[in-house]
Length: 241
Image (cartoon, rainbow, N blue to C red; front, top):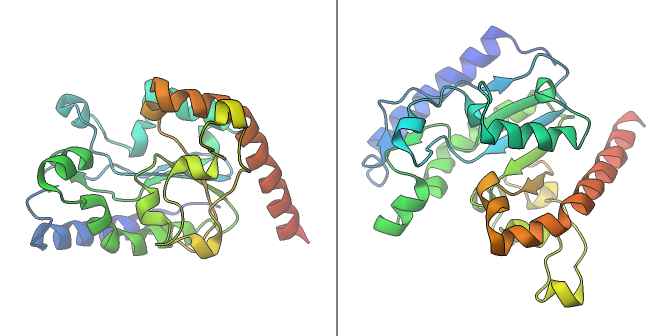
């Protein structure tokens, strides 16, 4: 897949329209930061085999936030880009094979978590109603690429109501897993997905560091990667047949 300037410009123009609409929305206008330019979409220079979907670019540290020029900060070395590079390596990929975007492409004046705690407003869910058509357009460029999501809040937007919206459910979590073992792995199927594409949920860097939940994900990571690899092989075979 070759990305053309026209394709990127079209998504950028539609994204700018969404930001204007969000800035006029009575529920959201107080929280949308219209002064910060939208981060650039990231696409590697090689064959794009993986689409990575993050939540939004609003990192908590304000000074760091000002430095977010590209989705998931993949234009610079750092903890997050290293985390993603290591994840890609588990599948024999590099950042050259990645297209990265966000579920919500705009900045908020505080992190969505902070806004929800202080004001009981779920800005990600509300804003995503306008952002989903843009995301679907991006995905239409890459119909055969595997899709990973990064972080749990994204699932509240990308998984349809009535289906599990927490990462651990797809990683085979079971109460008392240390003693009782695990449930089977699952991917989010196309019929469960608001983007009409199957995808594999991964945790964010911060979650993987937490001692309580991090222990479960660390215990499951190797096997989950193998599960994803097997699913990708099956789907690739289906495309080829």
